[in-house]
Amino acid sequence: MRIPLWIGGPAVIALSAVDAVLEIQIRAVRTLARAASSGMGTEVAV
Image (cartoon, rainbow, N blue to C red; front, top):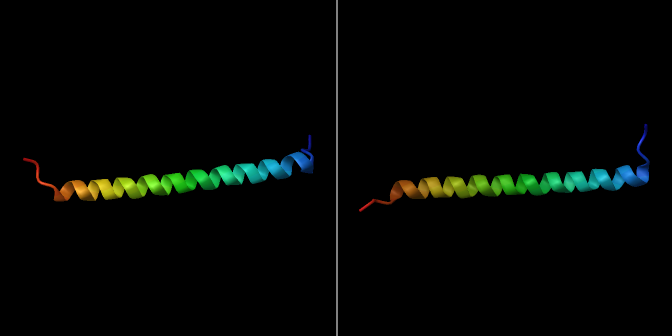
Protein backbone atom coordinates (compact mmCIF):
# COMPACT_ATOMS: atom_id res chain seq x y z
CA MET A 1 0.00 0.00 0.00
CA ARG A 2 1.43 3.38 -1.00
CA ILE A 3 0.84 6.50 1.06
CA PRO A 4 -0.50 9.43 -0.99
CA LEU A 5 1.87 12.36 -1.33
CA TRP A 6 -0.60 14.79 0.27
CA ILE A 7 -0.45 12.67 3.45
CA GLY A 8 3.18 11.57 3.26
CA GLY A 9 4.68 15.00 2.60
CA PRO A 10 3.33 16.75 5.71
CA ALA A 11 3.98 13.61 7.78
CA VAL A 12 7.66 13.60 6.79
CA ILE A 13 7.94 17.32 7.51
CA ALA A 14 6.29 16.88 10.92
CA LEU A 15 8.53 13.94 11.83
CA SER A 16 11.67 15.83 10.84
CA ALA A 17 10.53 18.83 12.89
CA VAL A 18 9.96 16.60 15.93
CA ASP A 19 13.38 15.04 15.40
CA ALA A 20 15.00 18.49 15.27
CA VAL A 21 13.25 19.58 18.47
CA LEU A 22 14.36 16.42 20.28
CA GLU A 23 17.93 16.92 19.09
CA ILE A 24 17.92 20.51 20.43
CA GLN A 25 16.54 19.29 23.77
CA ILE A 26 19.19 16.57 24.01
CA ARG A 27 21.95 19.11 23.36
CA ALA A 28 20.49 21.50 25.95
CA VAL A 29 20.28 18.77 28.60
CA ARG A 30 23.85 17.68 27.88
CA THR A 31 25.07 21.26 28.17
CA LEU A 32 23.20 21.82 31.43
CA ALA A 33 24.43 18.51 32.85
CA ARG A 34 28.01 19.34 31.88
CA ALA A 35 27.72 22.80 33.46
CA ALA A 36 26.19 21.39 36.63
CA SER A 37 28.82 18.67 36.99
CA SER A 38 31.70 21.08 36.42
CA GLY A 39 30.14 23.60 38.79
CA MET A 40 29.74 21.05 41.54
CA GLY A 41 33.43 20.25 41.52
CA THR A 42 34.47 23.81 42.37
CA GLU A 43 32.25 24.29 45.43
CA VAL A 44 33.44 23.28 48.89
CA ALA A 45 30.90 21.65 51.18
CA VAL A 46 30.80 23.11 54.70
